[in-house]
Image 1 (cartoon, rainbow, N blue to C red):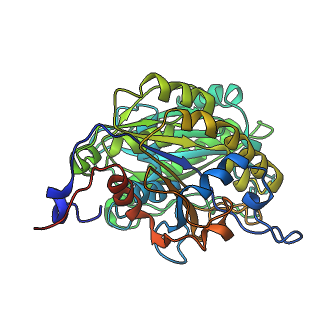
Image 2 (cartoon, rainbow, N blue to C red):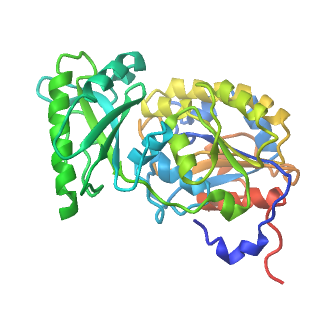
Length: 401
């Protein structure tokens, strides 16, 4: 986290409201034919108009050249140094679906995937196979028994699941099975230290048994595992900033992340419209709201440029309703860039917008990477946006005598 103790006397509790909208995978890159990014292709009049009345710039989630996962990307937006506070994807997923994760337990994020007859990966997400297919498969995998460990498999959503291990002598010091590309086979798990030997052996046995159970499936005929991790311990965001923070997110991993940093996770529905309904219902109960929008990232990871453009256009239609709440500060950020032309998270700076009574417009004409590169906020570490939001909302007062 930023050095909160150094300015702890400057934080103030006020009635003002902050809404942080995180558009997952917001940033993109120009299409090779048109030389325009997804944001530049999109018809987003509401976001464009908002940009004309806001302070704008670009954020660097971790460091220049580093492509972050969603966990580190979000932690930076909340003011935590992602290089100091490392959280495994497994713990995030497990906490997001309210798995009873205890000290000493190890969890991993699982993907159902598709492999060919030679065992090489064809699709790391099994064609985004739906939950109605994978929930029964998780029940089958949950029947696997391995000596020396209590093993559980929990469905998350679609192709994702959680592998949860409980027993003596477990460790997260193991490698992952996901090679992060297709055309090659899944990797064997290896111990990164002597403490990881038992866990590596257990996980390799689980994968072997899972392969036998799934071998007749058309799409979800194999599993990939990554993000092995135990229960993390982070400073409370509410205590640090003197806030009453709440999280509204449809996807489990982001609820898990919010739980770890001490936010109140408010149950919501599956769509962004549901999330806004939840925001309206609980708006008087908290002074900071984190709201998550996922579709842009999913389209970018699929390499579908047109689908990402549409996801951004769909988001734009909700902006007037968000503004009707009249938050004292509205910040719109991305946890990382997911350019469709790369079909992956990337290291590129991410657009950031901050709107308050103090932002009357600073010459930015549209909501895009190119326009925001000329914005007066410049290019800043993502860890600094919380300070800006607090200052614009009157929650960060004078520092020093």
